[in-house]
Image 1: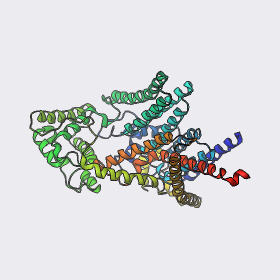
Image 2: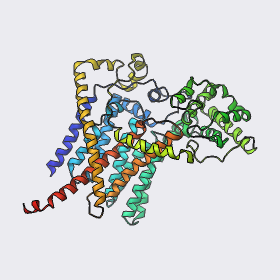
Image 3: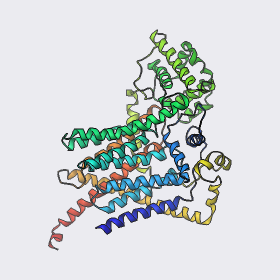
Image 4: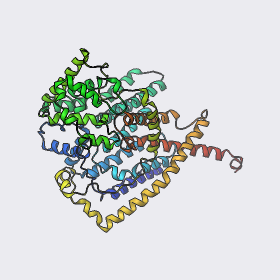
Length: 541
């Protein structure tokens, strides 16, 4: 038995080593996206230099991913290799967690092969986006939850799992702004534990919850305190700034009857606000621009050409404030946003504007009946897209501009600016061929495995009253993780920001899908074996 266990993990390590070999020649996918991909690289470089002056984009992104880039630099590793190590390490951790639930070890190896060799990962892990961190962190959280469910009887292991989960949640919470979506999954897991233990030993559950929450509070508070010492502003990034959230919330209060899906503050509403808010009026020239300029063009490229899309207006507002010179210091910026909020709220109180009550969450779009149908359609469309999201293979290098790479990427990523040119070497082209063959095999096998998994779940539901090695409620938790994410992304798509196929925002829950596939195959295999060996022919033999 020990030799079987050892061989499974040796095969898993062999897959990981192959993946590292297969990506070693692939360069970082450089980008000119100044507010996105490139922004994280610039932020990490600024952190390396220390004493970063305040500006419009200083705190525009959360600190988690720039901090990871900086850590990779301090460790002396090329960023693309660090990101691959993180991806594979999280996959191995999740494999060890699901191995405790799966009845056959070859299913554990199947999961890790699906995870490690997914074609999309050959370009995904070479980007400079926070999602590169988000997917392995999601996998780590899932592993923590699986271990929690298994270690309920051991107080030491249970608390240890809770603390590990809390550390992963702390990094997760400070990587992307919508981290709240993971809370229902964690809460559901603790709820299942409470129900299965019949609400006994609630004190242990409470302590475990504290262990999971405390690291989130500590890490987030540390980031906020560092920003306070540096800029006088106690928050982790701009979206949490009291002034900006107050101003945006006040603008969204006005003329709610004009609100429509994907447009938060229409032009007619802005014109009304200009008339009563001297501070907001200063931004008029920067906001009311031609359709082929700035953020108006970005909005039009997303399909909203007659105004600013809701997700775009946030950026346009910040740029307009920068154009007026109010991003010289954090306190000055806060004061200006607060002044806009006071002027708009005063106009609302005096009935100079038609206003609704303040929203509970400033940046969360309001729910209305008119978005229900496109929202449901978006959920169905994105659910299907998730099943194919891991299949595209891209081996490109991104922007092949040596000057850009030398200026921004070379030092902090520890990758020579001309590294992408070496891909013309014969051996590297051979490696591209190997990756292509492996990925093509993956693309052919994946739909078959997905179909077998679906069939396995259908058979298991038919045999609902029978005993099973893997409880259905475990699959329910994993499915709930997917549903929460898909519903959230679909809501953003119809209210704020077109997500297109949604790959960037859906891929963090791919580990849940892959786990479900292996569980479904396990169900099918066990039912097939029980049917096969219950046949009279086999009983005679």
